[in-house]
Amino acid sequence: MSNAEQTMDLAAPNGFNWRPYIVRAGQIAFAVFLIWVWKAGSQSAGEMFVADPFKVWDRLLKIAASGELGHHTYVTLKISAIGFAIGCFFGVGLPFVLRRLPRFTDAIEPFIMASVGVPKYALIPLFILWFGINDAPKLWLIGLLVFYPVFIAIFAGIRGVDSRLINMARVVGASESRISREVIWNALLPFFFSGLKIALPRAVSAAIIGEFLVGNEGIGYYIEHSRQQMDVTGAFTGIIVATALVLIVNSALVYIDRKFSAWRPTDRHMEL
Amino acid sequence: MSVLLEVRDLAKRFATRAGREPSPWIIQGLSFSVNEGEFLTIIGPSGGGKTTLLNMIAQIDAASGGEIRFQSQLAPINDMKSLKPGLNCQIGYVTQEDNLLPWRTCLENVLFPLLVQGKLNDETRARAQTLIRAVGLAGWEDHYPHELSGGMRKRTSLIRTLVYDPPVILMDEPFGALDAQTRLQLQDDLMRLWNLGKKTIVFVTHDISEAIALGDRTLVLTRQPSSVAGEHRITIPRPRDIRGILTHPEFIELYQRIRAQVQ
Image 1 (tube, each protein chain N blue to C red):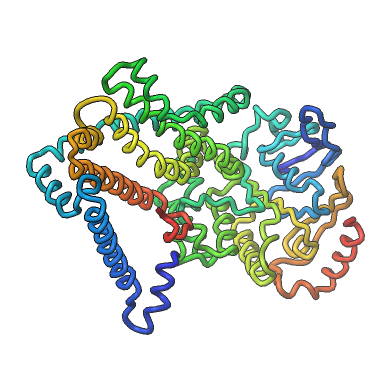
Image 2: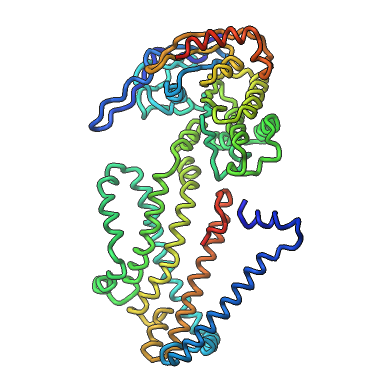
């Protein structure tokens, strides 16, 4: 049982539980405060540097109505999704292959771990040099940024599968493929999701960075293009859209994770 | 009564790892047999290779020597690759830890062996429900293992093995980690279930009273390398009262005899 449920159980006999509402009211007050700070910052620094929050809101409505917002969001989401799928495919698949090759794994592990340390964003110029000015360098960047957290999570997860559970399943007559599907896969799921929680926001940010440099559509392009036009309001609007995108993608992930892992004794308050 | 399971001259030492001496012999020259429908209890010092012995019988660990026969058939125990864990579902194994699948509810865990054996039908489902009720888990079927108490998890793992009815069941100190009260309750449950089906059971424990209270026969193992130090037939008539047995005159005599043998 999560802490929230416990508090509610304890609070119930005393009557109405105000706690969640107090938290919600605090959140709204804090949001208003942040917007005020933003507005004050914009006034003191000048709208040349910090856009006015209300003008950003107007711009948001305007580009939503003109279809620009939908188009750029679609482009960014699409490239993130494809790059994410590629990164995930290798990030999940490779550990399963390496599981069958323990000696090979021992041999290449230090090299894999060394490659984790390579700053991926620093490779963008090379990717552009190698793959040209199109979607390919973006996909490489996104793919790599997604691959590592997923790979590391799944790799650790496979090593951590309880061999006693596997033995139990064998004794009661489970086939090897049943064991992969039932025992290993389920034991991996929490690791997989924690990898995804890092990888998904990264995919979106990587797409945006790719769009700064290459191409003429997408949220990243919109931000960079606005900056070049000295349109600070446009740049701020783009950032707000990108942030919203990451938040939406993340909450979708949290929702799916919750559906899949009702069995886990986690404290729900710890979730991101 | 016919011999169902026979262990002869069994030996075990763990494999060499690079740059290390091979482990000392854990088990050497261990021989015994189990009759059909017999409740055999095995008692021995801790760290004496009891779990290793059961792992070898259950075919999840290879032996370094000797043989195991099941229904006079030789089991392939001499190399890791040819092992057949559970010997085609003929040997059930209740391990020391409950080893429940944490993503399956209590009921789903009990049904798991039936599912993987393709034996899930209305009749076996009903059997699972009967067992769940028999051990007092009714109402907890939809709970995940982390929502159950230690005793409930133990019961779940016990009936997960009983549900598919293997001819032999190995039990490795199944009640070792429980408090005295829960343990008595579970011993009671086990006796009741055993009386219904008269399964062949090999029950390993380090508790002399438990060995006497449950068994038809008790084997005492020596220190490492373990072999059989002695054998005691438990003639206390059944059905036994697990709680009252401690004061039975025969119990006291047996206890002292076994006590003297356990090193």
